[in-house]
Length: 380
Ligand code: GLN
Image (cartoon, rainbow, N blue to C red):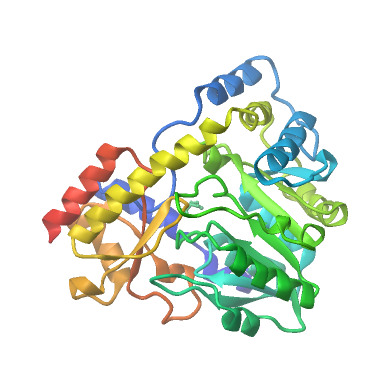
């Protein structure tokens, strides 16, 4: 294995899910829902498969899906997107990797919020660029101007932004996004805005797409995915859109990573993006109740629960339990407590960033969450 990839031989999600399976633990580690998305989505994909849409689709994605993404962006976020500037990818993961590989190389710096989603670090390592982290710290995970400013240099090429944010559950405010916008413009950096949790926003918070801020559409690549919005994380249908020149660069890389993406899923996702608004808001309402159920259970079990405004995830601090090392606890918990969670420290460079935090996924059936809460309570 090449040296730059040696720190990335395993993923915490695969390891923790395997451990949960082996021990029979309730898996609140890897973030995936345990109920299917809209019935029409599933039957549309099955129909596409049966009607023979099983060969290579067009490289940039089928026209219906590119149009549906553009319409969705106008309908929900007021963004003016041309279908020609939408590229369908194999999940958001590929969109991110292709963009980072297309736009950065050795000597370039990529600004990322810390904690960061694990694929960001591996992808930046693949490109040979250097990551510069901006700390978001518990319990509020606020983005400060000072921290952001400190990460920008004259080598900053790309900002890899993520809001709603995995793993903290933060939804960045307009004021925080304006800080990012201002610095990106000052340093003439492109922003890759990972908005996969765009619809998983809980009440009290509002998702503001970065590209909607003045001057940002021309330098922002927006990434999202059907996986999160429609609870089909295994389908791996994502997309990226932005200025033609930037999307063209991403397309150049994507065509040699995967060439094309999942033919029969594309018409189904296109139709789903046009479903009534209740489909989108309904899932967020369910998630809100789930966040509350799990947060109350965690608090009752003695954890200090942090702010959570969206995504699948809530973080909790183990210090009130008299512990300091959340990572050690996370690797013991499946066996000893019967619950799996992810230590937040694995998403950080700074060893002092989050040693006492665990990330719990609440995108699970209520009976599953109740079982987890009971086991945590019983473990004292
Ligand atoms: N995004 C999911 C999470 O954060 C997991 C995806 C994966 O397994 N790579 O839990």
